[in-house]
Length: 516
Image 1 (cartoon, rainbow, N blue to C red):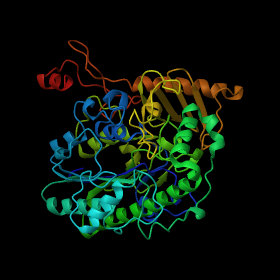
Image 2 (image 1 turned 135 degrees about the vertical axis):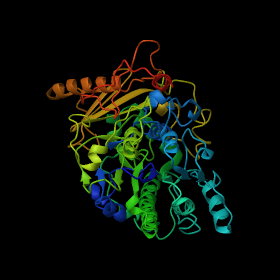
Image 3 (image 1 turned 90 degrees about the vertical axis):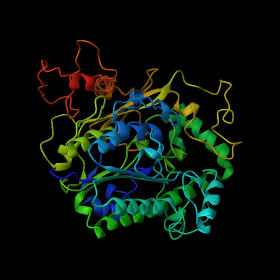
């Protein structure tokens, strides 16, 4: 583009991909987003590289998988490994940058030119000045990250999504006309604590919600960690577990509508300022939520489709109006190389994603480049189990069973890898335990085809594809020293022919870039 577009990334936290009418859901949870998406590209097959907040967010900035950028849990920000990331590229290209909302990445808020932050509770970066804001902060701190059975106090204007959008519009007004801008509008919702004010609290009553399509009877099929997680929730939520999960589901749906209304306010704010036609907007989430499926809430073990499948919608100048797009697998790691190509910048070395710009513009799609998606989880070592001497309280996963962190030593240990291709999803762990699902016919993944003789050929093909994806996801860093040169397609492609620059041209600048 002759003129660099403004860029806004709107990221929700823990939003399931399928709970929208545009995705076939029976309830109309996000009407504005669904209508808005028709003018852009709403990817039906979008995935997170890791269904955990910080690993996924670092992947967005670096274009790298978690085993390579090394932030494999929510507590490893200091270990981030990369050459240059999205923030570096944007600043090098004259962008003024802002963080409006939840961070939880490897960056400090001060790395952005403008920042007004928040977390999930009441005093995690917010500036609470009014009496309503102070009272709301106290309320959030008292939730213990659990579901709330009455409307949240303070109304809509104290809620984080409202304040995040206000911050974004404030930033845009301050920078407008001086330079292209980038805003990361990062909502901490619909993540727990599951709380929502009126009118959203009563908008989707528990008794009106569709029944979960996968109940606790599916837990045994899903593996030991799923059953263990349910057992912990039974201890935390007590005999009222089903009632409490229903209230959590109701609040979750209400939060989706609240987010939808605030996203509408953001887009209308761009229109009022005459900036919509000059701004690329990406709406996505870092990962999903069980929302009651399998008798579970939040997230936790392994790489089920319900946690890895995410909303991923692009709209803006140069992006063709395609609406819901069923073809092409895309991933959070693809954001950095796509934006680099969009603004005419070089993709940083070590980036493992690929530019999806041809899918956005409607151009010819490189054959087989977007035929699968890959994800990973785990921090290594053996699996912890009930025979070990660890306790939930000792590990910091529970506060005397009043609350519980579903991301913990047990659910995150080991190594798990997954691949989606065509109608199928395969998962394999470091012990050789495997799962194979036909997601097209079995979206809740209730029927493991791993040992079914009639699916042996599919299993063999998917194992080969998974092995190839794992090798492609190996880290190109550090670069080889002395005489060896790594050939990398500038758009991150693997299957498209590419003639590398003349290897005889070895300027000091080029060598320096390779050694970063």
